[in-house]
Length: 525
Image (cartoon, rainbow, N blue to C red; front, top):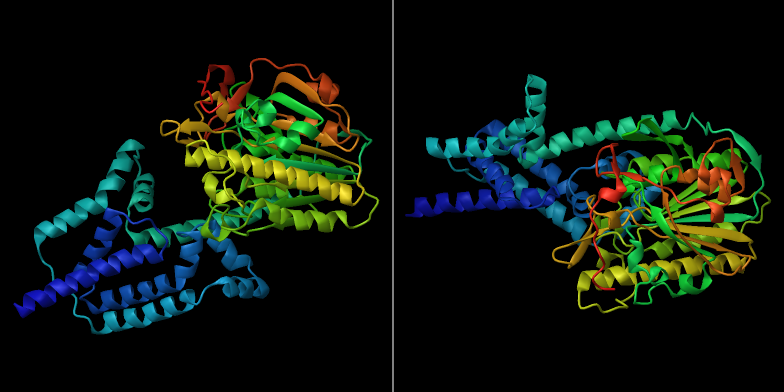
C-alpha cells in the first residue's frame, strides 16, 4: 500500500512538472504538450543521462521564465532582446520586474536540482502506454504531412519537427529558427539600407515646414462619426479636418502586408500578383528630397511578425519605439499611443531649417480592444468588445488633437494626414471584430487631412486604391516624382475615382477583385 502511494506520488510530481514546464516556456497549456512531457519523464528520467538532460532543461526553463511571461514562447523578439539589449536597457528591464520574477526562478532551480538528484522516478514498461505515447507524438505531424503532401525526406522531417507538440523540442527548434530569422532579417535590413530611393525626383517644393503621417491600426471607417457613425467618437476630426476622404481601399487586410504597399512603391509582375519595392518608400524619398525624417512607433520594433515595417522605418534618420519586442506581448501593457507625444514634442522643439517628415505608427484599435484603452470605456453599446473598439477610436481622435496642439505650441506650419492600415470584420455573431480577408470592410479605411491654413472642410467621395499611395503622399509633401500615375499627375482633390480595384488576401501576394468580396454591414450604426 505504501509502495503504491509512493508510485502515485511520483506520477503526480511528473505530471506537475509537465504542466510547469509548459508554463515556464511560455506555451499555451495543451493536453498533448503536457502528456508528451509527462511520458518523457516517466520513460527516461529514471536513467542517469535522462536525469541530467531534464535537470539542465528545467533549469533553462526557470531562467527563461521572465522572458516567457512577457514575450511568450521563443520568438524573434526574445532573440533580438538578447542580441541587441545594452547594459542600460537590461538594467531598465530588470528594474521593472517584481520581486516575484527573481525569487520564483531561483526557488524553482533549487527545487529542480533536488528533484532530479534525489527523486526516484517511476519505472514504466507498459507496452500499451508506450504505443499510446508514440501515437500521441506522431498524430499532429502525420496529419500535417498528409495535409501538405510532403513527399521528400527533408520535407517530411521538417514538417514533423515543426508540428510535434513536445515543449522541449518546440523550444529548441523555435529558438534555432528565430536566431536564423533574426540574423537573416538583420542582413536583409543592412543590405536594403544600401539601396536608397530609385524613383527619379523632378522637383521639391514643400508648402509646409512639418509633415506628419499618422498610421492608425485596425480602423474601419464606418465606426467613425467622421464617416457617419451615430456615436460621436471623432469630435476633433469632425470639426477640424481639412479633407475627409471616403473611399480609400487598403491594399491588404493586415498590417505587415498593407503598410509596405501604402508607403512604398508597388510593382506588378503580372496582372494577378503584386510585390512591394521597399527601398522606394516615403521615408527614403523624403531623405533624398532633403527632409529630416523621424519614425515614432507604438508597435514592436522586432517580433514574430514585426519584420517588414521596421525595414522601412530603418530608413528614418531618427526612430523611437515604445517597445523593442512584440507589439502585443505582455510587455506592451500600459504602453499607450500617448507615449509618442513627448517624443514629438522633443522633435518639434528643435529649431532647424530643414522640412520634417514625422511618421507616427499607432497601436490604435488593434485587437484586443480593451487593452488599448488608456481611459475608461467612453461608450456603451451593450457589447464590451465593440464598446472598447469605439472608445479606442475616440482615443486616437484625441491623440490627433494632441498632435496638432503640439504643432501649434511651436508655431509650426503643418500638414497632417491620418489613415489606417486596414479594417476588420465582425465575428462571433457581432460580438467582436477580427482580421478577415473575405469582406470589403476589412479594406475600407479612413483617409483624413489636417493643415495649418484652416481651410473650409472638403468631403470627397471617390474610391481609390492603396497601391502606389506613396505617390499621393509624395505629391502631398511637395515632392514631384517622375512617374505617370493619377496620384502624381493630379492635385489631391482632383484625383479621379478608380475602377476595378484589386487587393491582397491574408498571406500571399496574389491579387483579388475588391468588388467581389462580401459586405459586412455595421449593425451598431
